[in-house]
Length: 402
Image 1 (cartoon, rainbow, N blue to C red):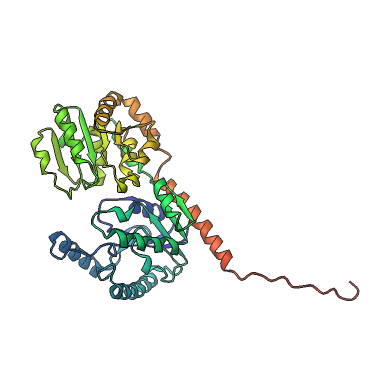
Image 2 (cartoon, rainbow, N blue to C red):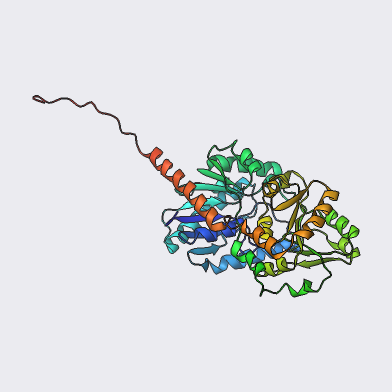
């Protein structure tokens, strides 16, 4: 897909990179992309300092106007009222977005455009003059604890039906969303293989803050939230006090309980650019997901990142991990998880790491973007054909002497 203009509703660009960042960066190589920072999936808590700070950042970003962050890729924070389920606010937001997008597209030379959404609550904002509507579904959004699940599910169903094409990142999501739109396709997450394979470079030094910890190092990076099984990690730390357990990432749940375990090190968020250094220091990397409705539908990018770095990997029994059982150990319970970590410790030789990394070479974001682009172009061509008036056959009268 080349020469297209894409406007997308998604999360805030400045947050930790997720699939939307990677997909849009890849598409921006041959297309122009206008990324709209989150238009709100929940009502903010005005008593929360965190939410108030976020509102302040959004206002500051809005006043700065569109910011170019890469060739063909601009970031913009639209001004909207933060009340996603209020019909008056929604109607006003729709009008504001229509006017804002018209002005931005004129400024950026984006006449004909596709409208994409990575958010489930944007159904009311589809139909702003786009040539094609795309919904890219990465999670079972209604299962998140901080949202009104019933309303989010209802809004997402409308969005699926309005979209010309729907993408899902896991098989379970494919089954669920296809019920609302037959033009639903599975495109699993990709990985920045070259970035994480740097961990295999002999000249790369491991992250200094964990390079001197007692070995082995059992490592995790990512957002530490309700879907991470902290009880499981604490249980492992207690039974193997000689292991060092390292957690890298922003924590938005209480992790103070780890204070009783001297072998657990909660480091906080680290730059994406530095993650290969942490992988370099990991003897085993883990995906310790709680097993519930939310994680039943998740397809963790970190699993592919660990494997691209060549690190022996252990996951709890989320469905998508089973697809990688040849290179990732999957455990059904606590005892199995501990045993899998012990077995994985024997699989960390340099050659084993290189072979493990090589299995991810074909799962790059660029490859995923090509797959997505082919599907979008096919849908666009079919939509164009369907919109053309059917030619009516006219009887041909034979002329005299024919």
